[in-house]
Amino acid sequence: MPEAGALEVVGLGRAYDAAGRRVVALERVDLALTAGSFTAVVGRSGCGKTTLLRLLAGLVEPSAGRIAYAGGRRPKVGCVFQEPRLMPWLTVAGNVGFGLVGRLAKAEAAARVAAALDLVGLAAFAEARPDALSGGMAQRVAIARALVLEPELLLLDEPFAALDAFTRRALQGELTDIWLAGRPTVVFVTHDVEEAVLLGETVVELAAGRLVGRRPVDLAFPRDPTDPAVAAHRRAVLDRLMQPDPASRPEPETLP
Amino acid sequence: MTFRSAAVGSTLFVVLGLAWWLAARIRLVEPFLLPPPAVVLDAAWGLAADGTLARHVLVSLKRVVVGFTLAVLVAVPVALVFGLSRGVRRVAEPPLEFLRQLPPLALVPLFILWLGIGEAQKVGIILFASFFPVFLGVSGGIAGVDPKLVEVGRVCGLGRLAIARRIVLPAALPSLVIGLRIGLGYSWRALVGAELVASSAGLGYLIVDAENLARTDIVLVGVLVIGILGLAADHLARLAVRRAAPWIRDDAGLADA
Image (cartoon, rainbow over the protein chains, first blue to last red):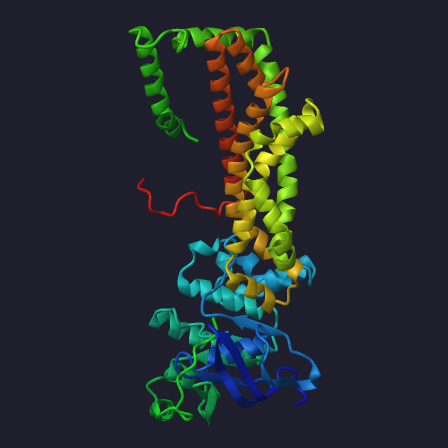
């Protein structure tokens, strides 16, 4: 795996103690991501998909297994959460440039922020305050904040789940364009099977903390939700996820 | 503040003033207990004309400014250290909590013993009185910072100090501001308390001196001036906050227009 952004997850697990009980959020996950790939991770709530993403983001440490990066170097990571998580005291431009402060010369940072805002169609809102934005606009700002870091690995945790259907569809298309233009390695977590099939080159199915399936979706972008091939993939993923629990144990909670 | 909102804000003051005037007029109370407004205004005019009032006000203002500034300079860093280190908090919190329970006035004798009866003692009392509201405001603000915002800093690769400075501090600002406002109010109260006991100048002294001379009108002048100065200080503080931190709301959107 020579290229930046490629990574391999080996025997990855994460358990934690809740009220004196050992809860396993993720168990023995093996997964290889090539550089520039788009992987959609799908599963019902509590299946461990957010835990997987938080492990990849370095927000929690694995309790078993490891993550190996191409070249032995942790790639530059950009992260988008389910909520925009904007700083209310900063303008839109200030939020987008948040991770650049002190790392780039001011002029260079400003140019990058402007380019990122342009990319998400919010150039006119650079000086706006976050509380003046709609949910979709705020999430676009969050995406710009991740992109401005020029990530080699872009992690998204149900970024469109809180948006209305129209905005969601628009942002899904934009995300595909952004990915095709810059080719970061993308891991996209969602509970929406259709979304996973529309966006992912590969759909990884998680259930009860285990990886239960890995499905290549060999369709051209942009994908059409009414395409019968998309519907077929969607049905297949759903079938897999609706199967009884492989280890038939109670569903673990997600990490807080 | 527009003229209209100023007018609305002073409605109750006017009503109370009229009630006061009426009570004095129909001799509801002894003039010795509550002199009529005209007499108090007269006394105020006299004190203002010969510069006495300005002198006392300046002395008190200086003590408040010095004491309160010191309190802020100590309380904010201490609260930040507490917020960043659980170990420090565990060790230092119980003694601080102990000190917090002590009324500043109960410490006046000790402060006089240790710091003399000069400025150091007054400033010390003010510092002690306003430290805790500011400290608790900042601590509460830090405790209330959304961990999700802190995570944004972590995924951006920020270290602990950078997160403290760029996320925790601004996010704690609304509580900090409340702490500052309460602290400012406390410092006025403590000041007058300190000046009542051992002093030769200041508004507290003005009041206690007038009491000894049985000049209720001057006592009232002192009380009114303290209230007015406190209101003005709070108003200025709010104005400064609105300019410097426009994202801080002053209501939850529940209040009617």
